[in-house]
Length: 161
Image (cartoon, rainbow, N blue to C red):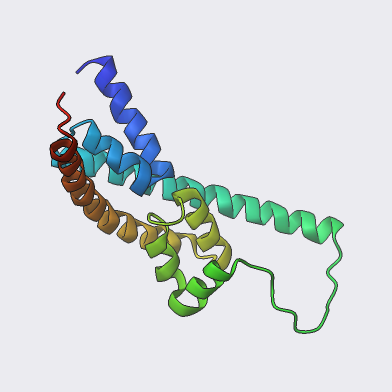
């Protein structure tokens, strides 16, 4: 195994930890990784990203809470709804944590989706578990989609390496 191959594996792993659906999996397909290697590296990268960002998010939320208590007095107003993105709010109220985990690899990125999930659902282990299931399922879907799409592009445009 050459340094180039190790570097490519590491690059796809890191890319998967940030953006699985539009980064790591297509890169693995373009690099012509065999099925098992592609699924293993991209899933491991996605899960590692979810674990890392869940821990970072929980730490950041804890620090923010400490700062807010110390420096920003809490003013009680009427029943004003909290300000949040309407799309995320709909996902949260309609589908809960499962919805956030489902849309994370597709629409959101792993860091953003995991941070939102930890913010709304403080149980970090539950968030990581839901993200793990979502990442595994979407990894298979993306792999076969990009594999088919890649070869369709090659045949349609007559690209040859």
